[in-house]
Amino acid sequence: MSRRLVVNVDHVATVRQARGVHDPEPVTAASLALLGGANGIVVHLREDRRHIQDRDVRLIRQIVHGYYCLEMAPTPEMVKVAIEVRPTSVTLVPERREELTTEGGLDVRTNATKIAEIARAFDEARVRLCLFIDPDLEQVKSAHRVGAGAVEIHTGRYAEGGPATQDEFNKICDAARLAAKLRLEVGVGHGLDYANVEPLVAVREIEEFSIGHSIVARAIFVGMERAVAEMKAIVG
Image 1 (cartoon, rainbow, N blue to C red):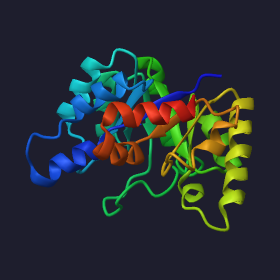
Image 2: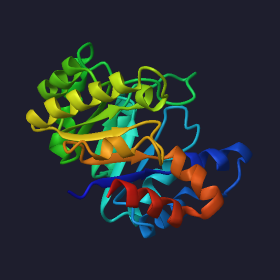
Image 3: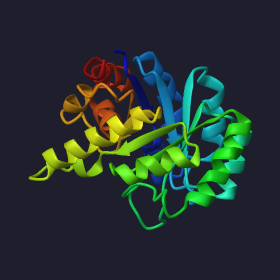
Image 4: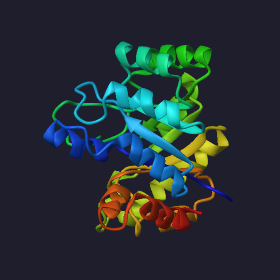
């Protein structure tokens, strides 16, 4: 089965913002990722605009004629941006200003009413809604109940390695199976690299791999096209 590899170019923008200049250009990185075999592009527009900027979101939309995913916090401001841009998919993620990167999944159970309202807005706009959740069966059920079309299962704790790796892998598998049974599309992401992604490729319910940092890091040495092509060869 062919899997989607969607490449996150946020950290190209991180390097750019470190100097407050124009390079490197995340739009160019997105183009090269597609040339390398990526099935789509993902960016996270944070509320504090620490890396990806509004102009990046709009310019990348112009060059990506296929699958384009916008990650964002579940706020009115971000919903407005997404409906204006009309990406293929929106992934709602929790967001805290002080975190270096997203630290865990969205608590869909606690925020069900608000997320259901957002789901209806995106359904009217014909934008697929995906929820970034921990590998927790109750969160999967909640995602289904609020009207999401997909879930992205948080793989951060699995990617950390150590004694709990197998337990975390099993949780991801169980969550993926339940999500597929509920007819939710299943993706995984966070902390995945060229080594730890391989066991997940064998999980047939997983349709999408969202990977950014490890590809951008590899691209520093071999270029974006090759870095993406190497990952795509693993994902299939």
